[in-house]
Structure formats: structure tokens, C-alpha cells
Length: 235
Picture 1 (cartoon, rainbow, N blue to C red):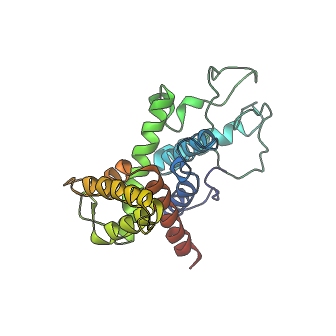
Picture 2 (spheres, rainbow, N blue to C red):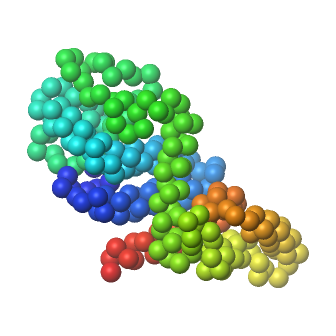
């Protein structure tokens, strides 16, 4: 359900679905103070939980077996806030995460779904842990996507001139480089200095550079990348 794929999806289809969903719901697609950001952060964690489980054949087999067992009427809790057992005919994937302070042996009686066995599970002790794991996993796929677009190269996904050209365009559009007044000129100078400092950081991957960008640049870059990824999917 989270990735919108069929249970028989290939590993490549799982990866492609992750790319689209992660770009669509990434928290940095909105401003840092946006009221939408907490919801996006939770969704992004779910997407990463799902991909972590389904991208590994062994974890995927374990999840399939457990899911089939619990969809057979044993009172499992699938998803947030639902106390009913899942419809056995529902073939959509969803990696459930427990609400805060909810144990895996609560309220459903009998056998309940083993929350900690899937997604980042017991590795993510706190919300900060979950955010870190999600960011690291997304970073690997982000670099792959930029390689495919010719914006990263080499083992360490170093930025290419194509990447810097896009970032320069994003910065100009976001910060008003072409605004012919003093406030606009000052904003442009500040953004230009910031971008220059980021670009002068040698040996960093495109994802490391992305993380150092200002929020408007992150928003624009993710939006542009999403357009390209979805265009490839349609074509």
C-alpha cells in the first residue's frame, strides 16, 4: 500500500516505486515551517520502512510469510489506528509502524503483528533515529537518480557541471538574482556566496551537497528531479 505496488512486483519495480514515492512525499518539498511538514516526515518514514523491508529478498520473504499468517484472521493490526484485521483479499503492501508508547502485544488479543520485525524495527529507538535511517537510505537512491540524469559521476557520486548548472538556475529563481533593486541584489549576493561556499567543498557527494543547500534550493531541486523521474516513468 505504501509503495503502491503489486505483491509480485520485481525488485526493480520496488526500487522504481520507492523513487517516485520518496520524491513525492519528501519533507524538503515544503518549507521548514510548513504545517504539512510533520505529516510528510511520518509518510517519508513509512516509505523508507517499506523500501527497507521489500528491497531485500530475505526480509521480503519474511514479511510475506508473516503478513500471510496475520491476514488469516489472527487479529493483526495493519497500519495506524486500525483495530480490525486486514481483509485477506487485500494484496497491497504496507509496512506498519507502532504508534508511540504502543507495545506489540496490545489490545487486539491473541496474536498481534510483530511491529519491530520489519522496517527499521528495533534499530530506530527514537524519532531522530528513524529520520537518520530514512535520510541515509534516500541518499543512496538520490545519488543513483542523479547519476542517471548525468548530474553525478564516479564511485562517490561527485557533482557534475550539469548538477551545478541546475543548482545555479534554482538559486537564481529562488533568491531573485534578476530583481533589479537593492534588496534583491543583497539577497542575490547572499545566495551567491552561500552557493560558492557549498561548491568549494571538495570531495563531497551530490547528496552531501544537497543537505547543505538552503531550504528553497532543496525544494526546487527535489521538484525538478521529481518531474524528470515521473517523466521517465510515463515514457
